[in-house]
Amino acid sequence: MNENRYEVVVNDEEQYSIWDAGSPPPAGWSEVGVSGTKEECLAHVDRVWTDMRPRSLREAMDREATDREATGRVADRQR
Image 1 (cartoon, one colour):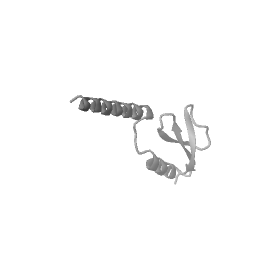
Image 2 (cartoon, rainbow, N blue to C red):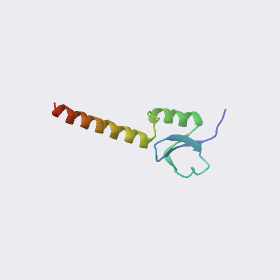
Image 3 (cartoon, rainbow, N blue to C red):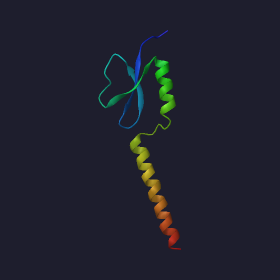
Image 4 (cartoon, rainbow, N blue to C red):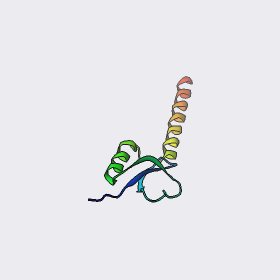
């Protein structure tokens, strides 16, 4: 059984991964405060990372949806 310890890490795009607990995370990644076995860390990632889209894509899609709604409301008022 693998007894290596891991840390859950996250980047600015809110994408998750695990990293060897004995090493600093790579540039652009930060520890989230969860450590454990590989299985424990992956279980945590499965619980918290429910939307695989990068944050920038989610935000762009949200803006697009908001713009579409606003355009639709203006069109409805013009009828």
